[in-house]
Image (cartoon, rainbow, N blue to C red; front, side, top):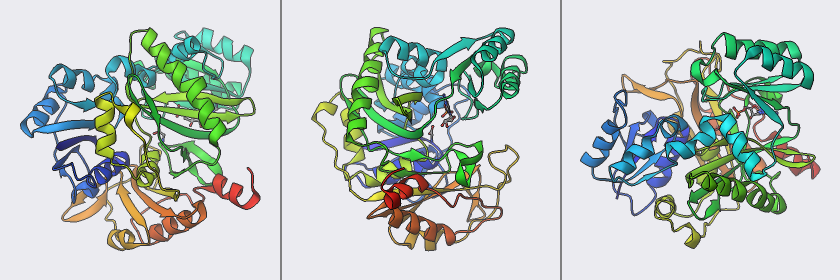
Length: 431
Ligand code: AMP
Ligand code: GLY
């Protein structure tokens, strides 16, 4: 079977890397792909400026038997609808289901209908009404653009002044265009964050291993939020009891509420959680796997990823039993200097990749790279996901950092404390 992976980041490199291990996969195409995928995938640039038919044409022309879509933007824009209309096998939610990520207000309504635990909220299109609400609710409070904003549409406000500024930015200044023309204002949740992901085939929801991301740019969780600066799996905060509770109190009722509205959910559902003193609460839903969570989940999966995705597309997840290594996996993201500010610089040659790839149980997933005069160069905010497996989290952390130390590019920045919460549990037996 030929497989097409849509996307260009670390998540998609990890998909391609894992699919290449399947004896059932012949050719792998990545659109557009990145420099790191080139040894296992054929990377092509196919413009979707005129819609997704060009990609469907590409899939047909290359005898693609399965298309896997990595990022949220094409899913929310309806890539799956186009492929399905043309009779092409594709994995991901259709546009109506992807609204769980594409509209935070829609996600909140579904959670209300499902009775799923989440922070109290109100949605506004009028700035004055929104300001009046935060004045009454008090700070800290969270202001979110309703639509997709490339991970930048959430402001955790410590003061009322910050909340007013965020509201004005979105509703008056149009900071996120249409995506910010409605804002969701939400109670600020306190606790430990975790990522929980399920594969859904419309009937069965099959959970993957849990993981934890590190959103802020600097050590100690300081500084502005990013797409994610590192991750690890498993996440000790998700014990067996919590895992069961997430499935019964969140995943099952949310999928049922979606179905009741006529949206049978097929694809990946990512539940971003805050584990609070009152139990788990949903921060957000995503309609795809996390990045960099994918980089630590898939290396622990011993089962064949092509088999798993096939089963999800064909409605056979009830028959699937996944096999996982007990080893821990850690990913450290190396970013461009200046990121997440949009002015970060790129185009810098990256050295040490071959040495890092040979480091003990390490794999370097490319997130934002391109080939320049035959050399790999930085080409994005997040550049590399340096990943390692180990018998426990501390061994995996040490190996990932040893591999990072071998890699250099001008201005490279990475956090030195990835895994700190899990490490603290290891040393102190509790968080
Ligand atoms: P998101 O873009 O929805 O992933 O949100 C980015 C980050 O903002 C999350 O990972 C949390 O750290 C934080 N966040 C979002 N919503 C809340 C909330 N209601 N309370 C506290 N933190 C939040
Ligand atoms: N790492 C968080 C996300 O993919 O949304």
